[in-house]
Length: 224
Image 1 (spheres, rainbow, N blue to C red):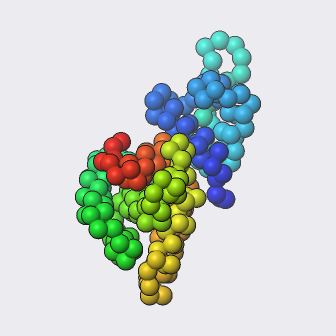
Image 2 (cartoon, rainbow, N blue to C red):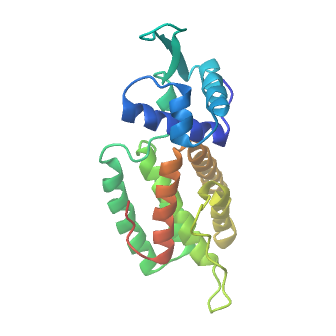
Image 3 (cartoon, rainbow, N blue to C red):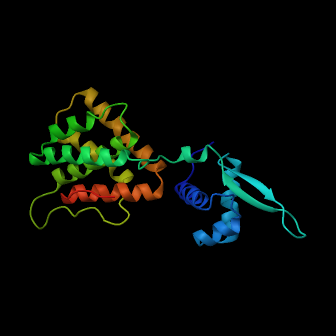
């Protein structure tokens, strides 16, 4: 199966939320109405997801005469396509831990210390921790690059902050420090990992992580 486009991932995420809310297979007209899109568009998207094994159709008999009604439900593979960052209580613990570490870093923000902190993420850490550390680290890199004074570098846009597109900014640490080849390779691998995970995130989780990053940039306590 090829990678889904962002539009397809967003549709899949929205369909999964609808299915969890209704707790039953859904007709494409119901999906279209809930998502405020055309019926043909909803059916085409569901049919496409069916072809790649993420959705399956069923036929429900009508009470009266007429053909059975086609309804759709996600397969067991569908949730695996989207990276869940805010599941259970994991995020609360991760957020508190990352905020405490960021506060310590900001007390004396220095490129070398920031690079070591980014590379110190445990390999078996939850996805949420790796994502939060990279998002926070990206904002701290931006602050390191920000010139002082009123004419300084403009802050990233608050709405629709695309952390995946900005992730490459972390490579600026290479220019600000004198890392070893191993450190450079490790940093580039973390940037690639972050960008891949960002693309897989549920759209709601992307917005939550963006809000967290913005609060880090502004020096406040993140919420959400």
